[in-house]
Every structure is written in C-alpha cells, then in structure tokens.
Image 1 (cartoon, one colour):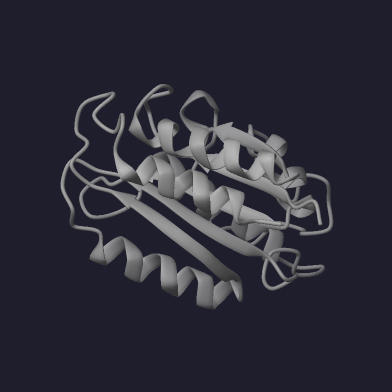
Image 2 (tube, one colour):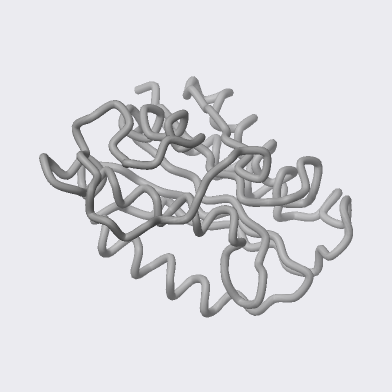
Length: 183
C-alpha cells in the first residue's frame, strides 16, 4: 500500500547531517512505492503557538495564524506517516521543529480531532554532535502516547558535529532500511 509520508525537517542546515538522514530515508521509502513530501522548516515562516484555542481542525487552515503552516496542515491531514527529523540541541529537538509540532495542535481543536489517532505512524531521525538522546526519546514516546500514533522506529546518529560528518556512517544505511521497510 502506498503510504503518504510527511517529513518535518527541523535542521537549520539544508545539506547537513539531518538532511543526509532524510535523504536516505526518502530513497528507501520511495523505492518501496511510497510518496514523500519534505518540509524544510528553517526556510519557512512559522510563528509560535499563541495558545488561543481558536483553531478549527476541519478548516483547510485550522489555525488562526496565517503563515507557512498553511502548507503543512493539508499534507499532515492526508498523511499516514510523519517523520520528525532534527538535530539534537540541548538534549531536545531543534526550535524549528518544536514550533511546528506545537502548531499541529490546531488539528486537535474544536470541530473534530484530525491529528490524534487515525492510524498514523511516526519516525524520528536525529543527528547530534554527542550521544545524549535519552531526554528527547522520552519526549518522543510521550508525544506518541498522546497522539495515539505508532512509532515505526528511530535512527539516532551521534558523533556528527560538522556538516558531512555522517558520510559513510551506518546510521545512513539504517535510515534507508527504515524507509525501505514502509509498505
């Protein structure tokens, strides 16, 4: 079955280590017949959540704010799988991806919950200079529990501080294999 996959890439480096992971994941997923759309969040204008509870999940753009989330909402609504791709910053996801995740809340508001459940699945792809992934994995597991999504797995690539450090490392093959496993 062709899965619709959305990648939220929270790296500030378009050609960095996180993007290398997403490229390999995408290659595997597309070879398995899936469609993939990637949003490079650092190049998008996305504002923080206002906490206004003014969203309406059934609207094309469910949030009261009109910014580049308008491009992401329809893709997420149509997706089966969401990939969270991010570098590790201070033991957590980047600010770019955290803002986008917070703004997805509009899909849970008022006239129907179009985010939680719905047989969605998720993947976590992360690169980091170090290897302290425990806190972010805890957050990811809590997020999966709240959203009632199944995690298909994660690839955590430590020891990659400079652009290109990930080249020829086994995590790239793991990202490819994870993408390839989706059918």
